Each structure stands twice: as structure tokens, then as C-alpha cells.
Image (tube, rainbow, N blue to C red; front, side, top):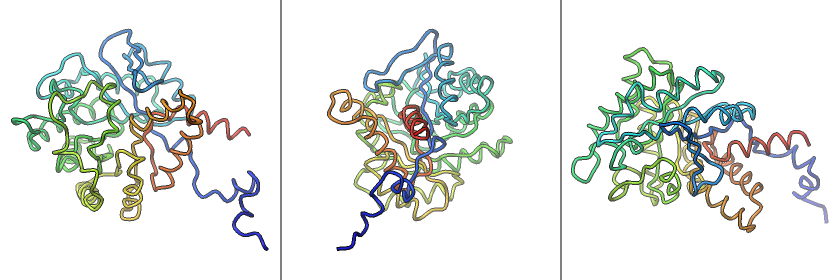
Length: 325
């Protein structure tokens, strides 16, 4: 019997030649948690290997990121002061504005992307201004304009609104354009689900809601067609990149966006996905490095052009090691 499809799997050399999907270090965006204060380097218990840094302790981390060839970082801020509106997020001397200026001065080759949201800055942990027990969409948009303008003035390269407010991309695009920042792209959190996979992130960013949850503004995990509507809204409002979050349980949504839109597609390999692999690897239940690479490959294969991942440094090391073999 003549051999069939197995012919192209016989050796590593031929498997490499016919491989359809390839990971590159340039695919990755590495999230960083910047905490206001001094002498802070605090490991996040639920995310082994990921730390919260004060600006005076972040230099070694940034140097490693650059040395590994990672081109982009996504910043999340943890301020000392929180209030009902999250006003520290638009303080010109707020922690993220300080971080943007520092990184652009010391590591100008890094693309600095700033999260645009309020959950880390509010004393209630929700993503905007509360009216009763819910987030008011339009009042939150007013503050979003203030936040994104402060980031733009600080020198940010890209903004990424994660709060899932209706019309947020439109408002940001208008605010940037009218203030002379037409060149700053917007990576929309276009399809962001209300997911249990975010648990460790809330430890990382001190952003656990003090009551309720975020299901009134983040998407229902059961919905697929709605994702196309959300993404189309961001396209119409001026987004430059569309994102799906989380990634691993929503590979079908990544593929749907890839098939339906011409814009670059990003996917966020979120904290819970990271934590599960780390925990299973620590217990010896899986080969952590192989599962990590297979996971990232699956996200790329599904259609993601950009992968936001806490594994960025480890994956970059694996890719570098592979290139030497």
C-alpha cells in the first residue's frame, strides 16, 4: 500500500518545511504591571514568574524584554490613590503616564501600549462611573477621553480600551484626532467576554469588583454572532486592530474575525490560561514548555496576528533556542 499523508511527517526536517503556521517573537505583546511607589518587585502568587514593579525596579525587566527581541509592552497601572471615578488614570503625573515617559526615554525601540480602563483606579473595581449598581456608559466615556489624552501627551504609541463601553473607540478616535494625535492607533478590545479566566489578573491589578460582576458590559460566553456585531462596531468607529479576549476558549471567535475583517487580529492569552499551564507544569502533570508553545501556536493558527501573553519572554527563549538547532 502506498504511503499517503504520513510521507510529509517522517522527519523533523520535512515537518519543518511543510509547516503551515509559525510563531515569531514579533507576534508577542508582553503585559507589564506598574505599581506606584518605590522598591517594589512583588511576584503575583497566582501568576508565577509575573511581577508588579515600581518604576525604580523595572529596568532589568525591560532590558530582558528588549534583549529577547520582544517589540511591544502593554502597561497596566496600580495607583496609590483610588476614588469613585478613577481620576488618577488621567493625572499627568499618574503612574502610567510616568511609566510611558520613562520607557520611551530609556527604551525608545519599545512600542508602548497603554490599557485604557478604570477598574485598577476605582475604589469599587468596576470599569467606569457608577450610577447605582451599574456602570454609566456615557459618563464613563467622558472620563475615557481624559485618560487617553493624558496617555497621548505622555508619549504612548498605542492605546487599548478594555472597558467594553459602547462607542468607546469613536470617542477615543475623536479625542486623539482633535488634539493632534491622529497617528496613535487604537487596539480595540472588540470582543471581550465576561470570563472566569480573568481571576489571576484581578490579583495582579487589584481590580476585583467590590460587588457584583461585569456581565452588564462584557460579552456573554455563549454568544458567537454578537462578536461580529461588536467587531463591526469597532471597525466603523475607527479601530486599527481588533482583539478577542480571552484567547484559548474563544479560538472560534478569533477565526470568525479573521474571516470577516481585513484589520489585524489580536488575541489576549489571559491570566487564567497562563496560571493553569504554570500550575500543571509545577505539579509535573504536563510538559510546561511544550504545552505553552502548542497553546500559542493554536492561537496563531486560529487567525491571530498578534498575541498578548504573559508567556512572551519564555516563548521568545524557546524560539531562540529552536533557531539555533
